[in-house]
Length: 506
Image 1 (cartoon, one colour):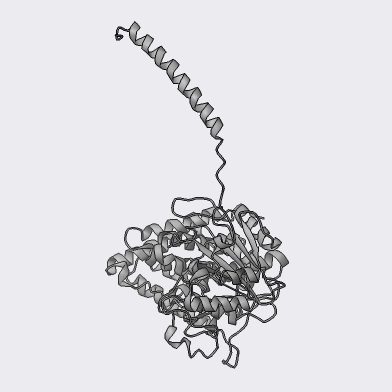
Image 2 (image 1 turned 45 degrees about the horizontal axis):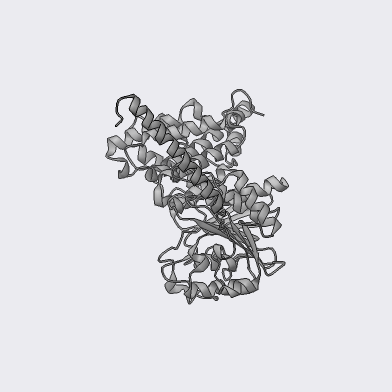
């Protein structure tokens, strides 16, 4: 229940988006997104910490040692001088950038492995904000924006932690919309995440992994799906992200959604997989593996693939300039043998390109791992207009068929981005679960049919969406033509009469 003094989602979304005005026109959104998102995280943990401190003072005011001991056991520990409010009080003094960086470093140190290295790729004391005076003024304005009453993020005022997490996601989505090609590095549209999470059906007790974590929204959606369906928080989220600042966003995103039971590693998944067994020799295996990897990544690690110690490329080594099957191969090898299921977003070339990719695709189908191919509409993803597909793989299939769904023509059209509506998603899911052919929408293909097509998975080979043109009745057309001809002759006679009356006749 929301009380009168609680903030609502719209208000907090507008307030954090308005805070971006400080930077607009000065630096690009792709640069200042890290400052805004980090400041939201710092403000949240500072307000919660301040709130808790007030409560303990009211309760144990005459026992500062006890209060100090209890504060040191909070979810996040804030060292003296490192909270948002300490920075806010000194906002008119020189050195805002340096002060913020020092505070973030102190918070990292005080919280051990929980926040280790999270802020190391994010520096407020950067020349990208201009010379010292301009930088100091910009950061003062930023502190003042987050210091407004509307952004009081204390527990009592926020109510559900989801409100903070949703505001963070709201910002990430808007930054992605303005970031062009780079958006794909960290953001999967929420409808696509919902579709993947619903299809993969994560359940209580599952270990769920995204080897290309980005900002973590796909993992969070899977966690939310478990809670929605079972009411349980007994699951674990794993991931790996190559870009340091994006990895930091994912970590903060997890905490702001209350997902403390996560393990997100920082590093290149293909060249250096870090989610390994305790002995360090084998890869960890998961119940659910899902990702939206970079499309056709050049320089993905081809040179070392033939000597891969984990045997990920035993079906073949993907081409040097297209890493799609490198990610697919990695994901397949991290599936648990009985429960493992996987959903991956791919460009359409993955479905039909020949050579080494064709050999890998053929073997995956022969091993009966491929379950479903879903064709998506174009312009769903930020940074690229090309249509993509989702491949669903399962370790324990009950038949040898592959379901093809052509969902490319049903979407809500937008100027820059198209969207899948709830109805579009539900139709895909219903079709996926029914596992039956649907005229002009889905086709359940046998192994033999796919083999006859040389293991080419191009969706139009299986789902016929051709609409026949209506037959033309030539007799009716001739009759209508004669009728129009007679009407025209009548009009010509009438027109000639009018012209004579007006004195224009012969």
